[in-house]
Length: 471
Image 1 (cartoon, rainbow, N blue to C red):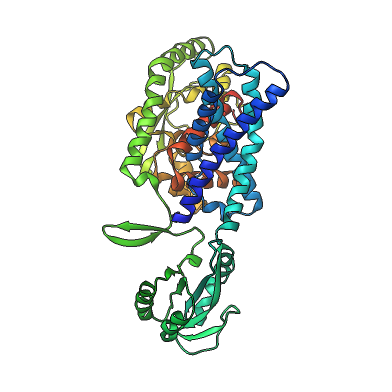
Image 2: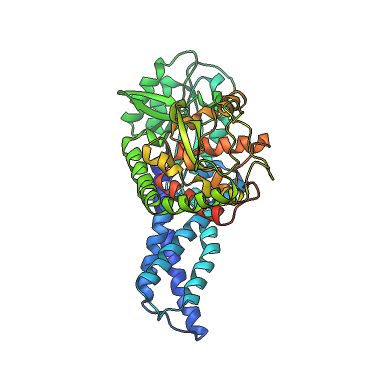
């Protein structure tokens, strides 16, 4: 769950991105004027369109702002690349969309291309540097922000790493109050006494934050500490001592008026989010089914007639939402041999003799997947989601990969977070399979509409330029 500070930084990040793009647009016009090239017609119209594109793209790339701080340097670089690529793609769509929609023949397309191309390194630098800059200035308020720890000395070591990191957020830990009189490990901080003496200390010293480390031996003292924090205007943080027991981050949630921790954030548990995702699915699947699918059906049937007679469609049972079974539709790309006892779990391999020539082309460019828009309209699949597998593969994966079944929390997709990154085809490398499952799990816990839009954009590129694993 993002806190208000991270949400505020995310908003500032978006505003600065817009201002940077606006400033660079003005710089490009100045450069263009120095080079004495053709003038740009309606320059401020394009500037506004550019900012609109960046704002839309930023909503899709800056949701979990606080997570950026948890990554190492290479993780931050990779995320900055990903954000910048998506932002540039949306920016290009907006700018050239405005160009063609307005039929603006007076503006140089070379100028627009120059502006968009040179925006990429600027976006990359901004996305990478701003979070670090915000973190450095976070503690600057013109006052000293002192914090004290309260807890059993045996439990304080659990928060040692957090104490070190939080010191960089503008807080100075001045000491420790304990639940009993002892001299245990206090992470090098001075002992200020038992917690009953805390009010006296606050009255004589500035304290802005009290950090409670819950004790395994009793928590009766926490309510009095909370009352004390409210009475003297101190910010109270209660350290989640359960976090170290789990590899994933715990997520706070409310259920029927009670507060809980859970292992997974699930945005698609929201009825509103499900409605938005369903509308997005229909908006693309319905016109594709009406206008594109009939043409492809005629084309594929013609090639079936000459190269491989048999049924037009290939239907197979797959595992979907909540482990339920459904029948997936594809264009048939292999030779048809009626055999009710054949093993359908045998995957297609490179240069597979079962695939006829046009079928190979269909599989390479994912044309055989188009009938799945029917599954989307029926509500069995979504446009974007984890790819559905056979029940046999599903069973094997859940035995070998602990977090595999998390992908069943959402509908399977025609395309997914792994497939749009080229991770598709035969299951030959366990590490790549694990990476697919990790991407699916991240999708379930971090879904946004903009993430779906990004995956669709990436998929279009994958279809136009297929990876080597497409066969």
